[in-house]
Image (cartoon, rainbow, N blue to C red; front, side):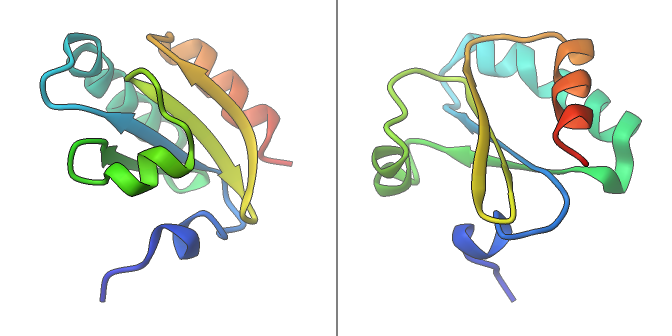
Length: 100
């Protein structure tokens, strides 16, 4: 069964949402960084990728103007947002800071 976006962001653990596009070069660079973050944090974080071209209404709802844009949610609340590239270390620090 497919969960809806609003169901996914209601989780108790932080949910990192990566709004990306297949044609976006920085998005391609970010993909392995997100995998490393997931490998490091495991079950402590959920990471979902949203293709802005396939999910235009969702991208519009969250006013995604540039890709990649990452957002961190927990219990349905947006805790953090960042557009552009970010290091694995920075991302892990931010997720851990919001885990409490």
